[in-house]
Image 1: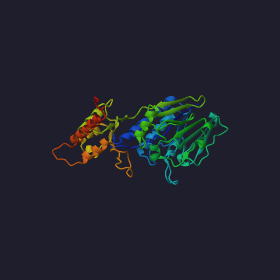
Image 2: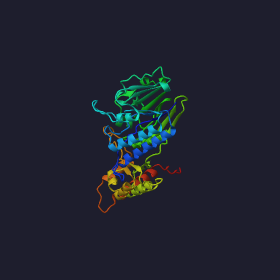
Image 3: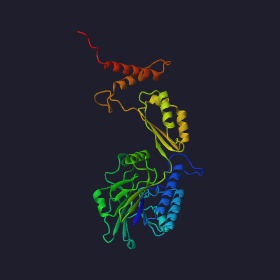
Image 4: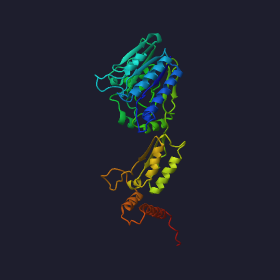
Length: 395
């Protein structure tokens, strides 16, 4: 028996101000296109079971466009795989704050999809010798995760955070109300555990996985990209799992739009002209160009007075070409000028000299940046002279 596991669709997600010719937010259209690709891939795989582990929509009250697209794609899935079992559970983005407010997910029940959105529910399929315990986000932490001893295959489908596995940047922005301990999860008791909420594909146990989101829709997309890069992942995708053999495959999905994190630049000891040229070289070096992509360029140790003198006309041109161009300008680290009291690192002599020269009042006809640069050059020359070996004296 083969299943496909996907999660965190976040249909209706909007970002940036660019619209399609039809007036739809461009990122919303991107995510919708990714979902269409995911449905096509699932149909091609033709599994026995499809598990969707929460956050179908980005908002509790999604737009009509998002609802219609989800309905049409789910209908296409059900018509193409009429014998497949399809189960959807609610994630935190799908769950209304008030218990009296109904959710939108029950709409898909009319298609023959099993929807678990209010209470944990055990779904038994005796003809398949399969039992699925669906636990929506609202009940994580209040449910005992116990398999059905009468079923050959037991699957746990839930949306939530397993204790200790979220990176700090995720935990700070989208933390679940209750974290599940590994003891509560009891992965070894299950044939498979399908998890949702964390946006990067990750193994929790040999039979327990987060599928990750299908597109970049979290509050920290650059953090997602970094995690995928250090994990050696090709990007977003869906999981295929054979419950009989244990064969496990991660199927990458085609990206809806490239995300490009350009090599960071240190503005330390650079003049405004130097930095403008370095920015130009970095952007021009982007493989395939930046047009219609989501791009970030981090500039570290950038003093405020240098930031004011950047070529903002050129930056505006980059923003016009890319879907979004983020110039992430970071100020120099706070310097600790005294032994105690102020936070930060201890300044070097060059830091101290630079700070003094930048704060010095000089004539309007003198180039301040050239003045600072020349002062630092003199300092380096003095330091190099100081470490040269003394000449041998004849006795």
